[in-house]
Image 1 (cartoon, helix red, strand yellow):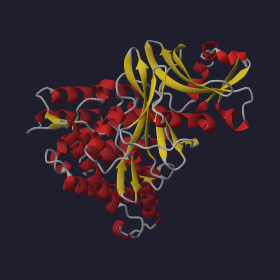
Image 2: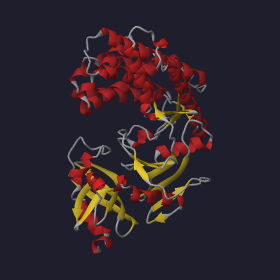
Image 3: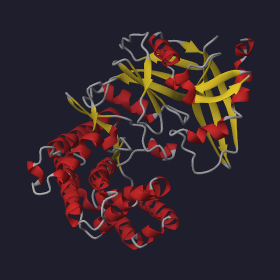
Image 4: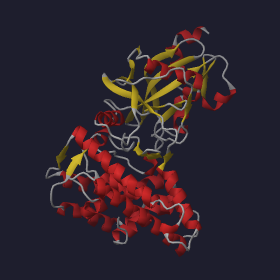
Length: 466
């Protein structure tokens, strides 16, 4: 076991396995190009001996792109069979594996936070007033993509941010701000893990209360769509799984969170150049995606016209901190109401964009797109010419989009009011999001490409309103 006493040698051998292993992980964001090199930036021993637990930060080089990722690495002389799927390689005669699936090792993370521990440059800290129970085993949440979350018993959930960005992560910052003003639509923030990256502070992870009775909005919405499809003769408001009441309450919750963020962190009125910058960004995205996806090109003139209408916007437009990646998968329904999660922003967006002040209507547009997705994903694999199914999907989407806007208008900050009163702005944000979706589906799920393309066609033709 002497090799375990010098983790640097173990890591030095392990990084040679990572160019092949990293692209197989769902949270790795660099699947668009080959890895040319992986370099260790920092190694911290969280648990010495056998088993060994290391926190490793590596820099992944892909041509001219260099991005840091964090890994939890376990190593022990006899690897249990259930951890075999996490195996990365055998170094110095010892199996090394991705440790987030090892409940015995990851329990150490909660104990360190509960104890306000410091190990090397890593600081494990409870939030002021938080009381934590240690000694709980963890299980990973399997549905995530860009990060990894661990649930400890039925009490806590720890999110580990895989791709690291210098500075305080927006998810941690906004949760703290919302907690300080008593927001009722977030899970309690309990602790954090922070470190250093290039001499700057960096957020490694954040611990929150686990809401064990929660159901995510996407699961509820798609169940409602299935119920509607199963009763093709009934009007939507008479189907047992009608979602409109929940959509309205969700709109109220989102408006309340926007109000809380404005109260906690302030807002400002967009300057004269804001719309020019926004239109340019939208047009640039459209040009880039149109080159990669020929099916989008036929819609480009109508999209450009919709984006250009932003230059005609009248009246002040409020800018503030927002969620930044809001959709039905980012909201949870529990017994006390709707909760918003994951305030990190769009994972693929540049760091500067994710911390910038933006219009709350961007979040509204993201949720409207999600209602459209929930309805029309049910048509994938069906006969595209079945007008009955298509009309039922449109009925569901229109009903719930409208209900969401009704709820938002009821509880909206005075600076926004009813989203539908800002038609050109909301439409442009929704179309820009749909262009992004075209790029995503083209790269990841080509069979889903018809969902955003069909939406673009309807919106630009004036046939789809909130």
